[in-house]
Amino acid sequence: MEKTAKSVWNNCLEFINDNVEDAVFNTWFKPIIPIKLTKSDLTIQVPSKFFYEWLEEHYVGVLRSAISKTLGEEAKLRYDVVMAYDYDNKKANIITIPSTKRTKPVQQQTLNMPNSQMGEINGVVNPFALPGLRRVKVDSQLNPNYSFDNFVVGESNRLAKSAGYAVSKNPGGTAFNPLFLFGGVGLGKTHLSHSIGIEVKERYPEKTVLYVSAEKFTQQFTEASRKNNRNDFINFYQMIDVLIIDDVQFFSTKKGTQDVFFQIFNHLHQIGKQLILTSDKAPVDMQGFENRLLSRFKWGLSAEINSADYNTRVEIIKTRNDKDGTVMPEEVVEFLASNITTNVRELEGALISLLAHASFSDEGLSIELARKVIKKFVKNTTKEISIDYIQKVVCDYFSMDMDVLQSKSRKRNVVQARQLAMFFAKRFTKASLASIGTQIGKRDHATVLHACKTVGNLSETDRNFKIYVEELDKKLSSMN
Image 1 (cartoon, one colour):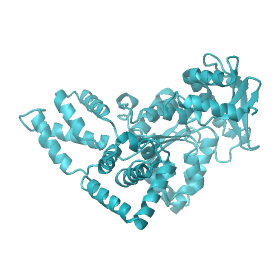
Image 2 (spheres, rainbow, N blue to C red):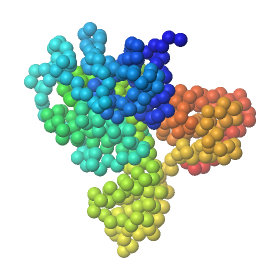
Image 3 (tube, rainbow, N blue to C red):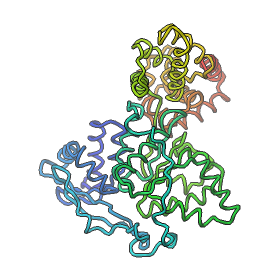
Image 4 (cartoon, rainbow, N blue to C red):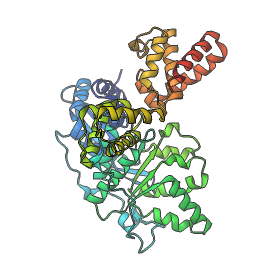
């Protein structure tokens, strides 16, 4: 069989997938497109200069190993780098770069990049840029307390933080545009988005950065429409260099707001400005949005922030104590981290409550006081069931090992148990379909969606299966 660029690259992907983490594979290797195969030279296309430099700096070793394994030791790798997009002629401006042992700087002056400072795209005057208004001073609305310095990194947010920091160093110039941060309430999305904005302001004081909640954006648009100032509203937002919209799920079903945001998004993206969006759901799970807007949410990187693990919760408490100058016994720190597991916001609330009680008591920050305060706090807090716990309950119910549930087995009893775990994970947690699939056997979101539909259908047609669902529901509901 004759080798093609696609077949060679598919073989390379198999090797790469076995040697890197799933998050790395999906972020840095899936977007690559095989372009051309000439003798032993493979040309691949990457979406930006930043993307190319990141690969060469961090993953050139695994790339070279994959190419050599597939094409031989003399094989060479070349990149087609998308440097800009010509929106008038609907084609990308691309340069070809050979792979090097270290990152080779690209000569920027040879590229046809948009001149956003002049309000032009490929020489065409931007009709939305108002003369004299490009450098209007805008209050960024950023909270100085939400910086990278006090953003605690753990496995739950490492990818999101790394991507956010990369954006802050080169806003509008990375593959992460838009950067879409999603996850449940109180997990740090707002903190991270502020951190990015603060870092951009420190590195590039001349850039206009704006943080705004989706609710505030909607209120402003409604007021502008009422006063017939719609164009002024659009022009203002199209002057922003880094636009941060928090809780974009608020735009759901609001057609007018979605229409105007679509215009603003397109304009900023086309001239190389940075968009940062946060939501409680992944784009694939969002309802009440026009498809054209959802598709744009997926253009860059969607990074999920999950609930912090135990070690991260400990570090969050210690970081907060250091900031406040509080000395807290280690056993109290560990007790807090073990008992407040829902989200960072509630963890910090419990910490504040404990410190307040300690200041009015003679006990000081003791483990006894912590037990009293946290007992009351947890009693009034809805306990969120974890996906791990759901899998344990399902496995116990069917007398099945967790490894079997998460395996690739297609046995009927295993498949049904796995589908039930996915069904209840969707019902009892705020995790995205993609996150549920990753944690239950490394499946994709489509598999989870299919599992949920199958459970619904079998509950109506299979009496025994309906009993499984009802009994598991009782067990899990009693914990919620």
